[in-house]
Length: 298
Image (cartoon, rainbow, N blue to C red; front, side):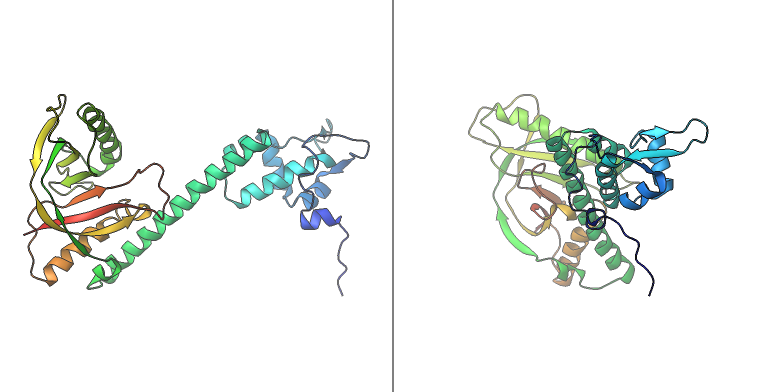
């Protein structure tokens, strides 16, 4: 039977990995060779040399003649933290920020990073589903959505319209909404979900146009600083999307599903398709419902 090399229990299990503050030296804080430090920290010597060059984990002593590195035992806590952060695929620049931050701030940085990772993965999952449908050419792909119907009353809306390509949309759209909401607050506030009307195709080659609409109270004085128009009462069919489904191009699955649903029933669209945003986008998580893709019907 192959002999198992002896290592301290905490090195194997990670118990007490953060018990001693990084760099805290004591009477027992001995110097370790780079090989032993690598084994106990679960970092390769190549990684340790890289982290030294980046100033992320600097040896306690470097021999001037040989360049041989030695680390203090108290540096194991930092090294193990670095190893675990890298297992999260955290970029080295952010690892350095976490390592140098006090505990509560470091915890906030990790939480913020992981929220972004989960949001990206959720969006990629929806994108993969969209691509699968496109590549397989599945019929009745609207089955992945629940198609609903509703009556929409006439609305007075503040409106801003622009020709904009897909790459520019993510910057212009929220800015336009903020402008219109500010104007709306001067005439009684916003009284319904904001919506975006796609007057034409929006992608890398086509620039719409796109119209942003914010409903306001028609009984109040006419607002200044923005164009207004009447959005006529209509019936519409729609599907509800989670935040992760709203990204481009996966949102196209919803538009395609509604178009197929209407075609299967011989129903013509009676107006331009739109996206209706009914909740706060910034506070919503990837799995939260945030938007309806809707088609007016006759």
